[in-house]
Amino acid sequence: MLKNKAAIVTGSTSGIGLGIATALAAQHCNVMLNGFGDPTAIENTRKGLSEKYGVKIGYSAADVSKPAEIRALVASAERELGSVDILVNNAGIQHVAPVEDFPDDRWDAVIAINLAAAFHAIKAALPGMKRRNWGRIINVASAHGLVASGQKAAYVTSKHGIVGLTKVVGIETANDGITCNAICPGWVLTALVQKQIEAKAKETGISVEQAKRNLLSEKQPMLQFTTPEQIGGLAVFLCSEHAATMTGAALPIDGGWTAQ
Ligand code: NAD
Image 1 (cartoon, rainbow, N blue to C red):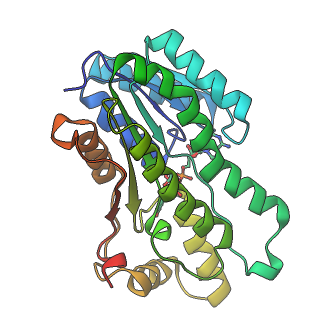
Image 2: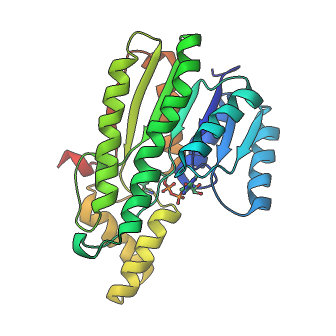
């Protein structure tokens, strides 16, 4: 379906980003991976995806908290893969603390990575998409882009912000063959969430399994995690012609979290 198209997926060395990159590659899309991690593991992932799906898979270690590195990431994808037709702004971090104790540097980092990075990447990728009159921009927001939880000031702010950015870009590109949508997952069992579960288990003296069950039941009517593969499936749908008139939308995939 996406043969001869090329995508950047930020933060695709693990979790949801890797799920999306894999789903795009499975549709014969060339992909530029990005994110941190063990170089050997990343190279194995890159090579494995390329061999399995017969597509070009590149890798950039760009730190998306730095606008100059984002611009270089877009330029290198255009050079190595020929274009950036699909941009998935997925890289994200979390920090949990009450507002009055929230460290200034964590606030700055969350806003830079979860929100400002998407602005800089979209700005850099749009001219090429407009020239080709085709583009798909997918911002990985969160249920926390639609509703709030305590202790997550920076994260909730960044995710509400990216939903707003999604709407503006959707409107501005409405007649350029480009769509911009946000995916809003509930709980997905990735490194980002595992850390929160382990911290809760330690803090309250319960098992990790119990902390997992508590986490789900506190927010989600559906007591199961969404998988990176399911989010990859939604991203592929957003890249398809069936979704050509969907734009500026914030789509929950959250087990009923935000239906309440
Ligand atoms: P993860 O920790 O497994 O993956 C995060 C990825 O971002 C990794 O590849 C990491 O290397 C990369 N990254 C972090 N900082 C970076 C930087 N400065 N520059 C480049 N890459 C960087 O987490 P995940 O759960 O897969 O999260 C992916 C996205 O999904 C995030 O935006 C997160 O907010 C969002 N999300 C996650 C959940 C969940 O339950 N896991 C729910 C809703 C939304």
